Image (tube, rainbow, N blue to C red; front, side):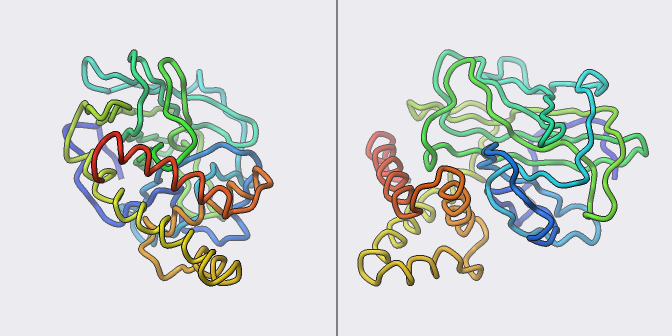
Length: 269
């Protein structure tokens, strides 16, 4: 699978998730550090791949190997005047990853970006990143940076990708904390269209705890029959609660309150 560059709006190819999305068994996907990835890795275009949710943190495996970002020929293909930029970074526990930096003077509430790495075999596997901080703790402040996507070309745990030699990435859409937007509206719809359902799920989740108790609450958190984009909200709560060593219900209430405040400022989702 090859593409010469990222050109034009990215078509909607379901399913898109708000979490790192790979066809790896849960025992293979082990969280080592709290690198929040409130976005998705879309490998649904890879032949034979059946995307599955593995939570909202950067995942690290025994297959991660050291690679210097300077050895990757990277092109930031974001449109001229984009309020955010992309770059390649490295972390010893995560490996190579793409980061988005807010280069504007306003806080960023959500963004859509894509990066496509190519390895030494010529294989390319794109990653679509959908970050929505309405359901997190804070916006992306001016000059701040957040991880967006892991950079690799592996398509199975037993066959890791080869050395990444080049990558092209672009920030295609942004929503600022004042509600204004920049960029491709179709890309933005992939984030905005699901907000109301996420909010409704959080409301139902908190109500479940107080109406029916913790057991019922936990069952709802682990209900894999939900729309994967909605279930990802629960997955993030579970993993973040473990990472921060706080009860999941506390995070659920905090995130519900934060989302409701944003809705009061921006209007109905």
